[in-house]
Image (tube, rainbow, N blue to C red; front, side, top):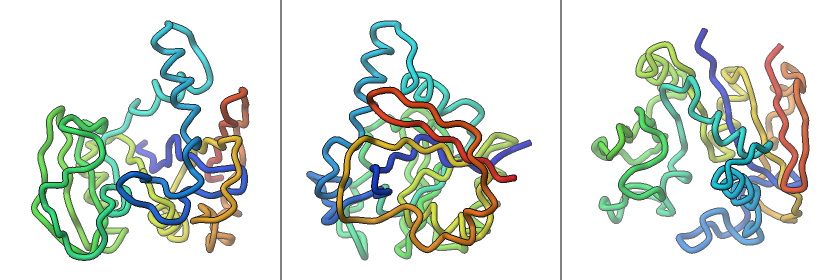
Length: 209
């Protein structure tokens, strides 16, 4: 059965997903330079043919996934009306999704087909309607709620997420957008089913019971 899941969503030890002043040269904001160092370790392990906690999670990211939902802030550093529609995301000509990817925004623009099978669709529909579209596009595959924190929070509060796979980086940011702000009631439906660590990060899986 198709599941709605958050996968490899990285936060700091103090629960912050993005620091202040997100911008083009600091997409995760101030104080977050090292938040994804675990990915560099994982990629080095992959290149060396080694297994590892991070490498295993990178390998498993796309397994069974048929569609992705993300917020405007994850897609672009721009806010408000689109000043530059030549922007097609942070990921270059061949984004890593390779399927239909729905971007939640109040400012619509035409869909963008990319190399490798990714198509970005921009929508201002209610989150439930977007999820229905994503499940249909996934064709029986899982749907990933990719981020940022505000988007994950919306789906948590609506009770629409089945599984949270978090990466806790061993840094403190001190200020920024905390993943679990405003979702206290929703978290009671989840149970921690896995928590493992290596020097680069702690990997936590929570599943709806």
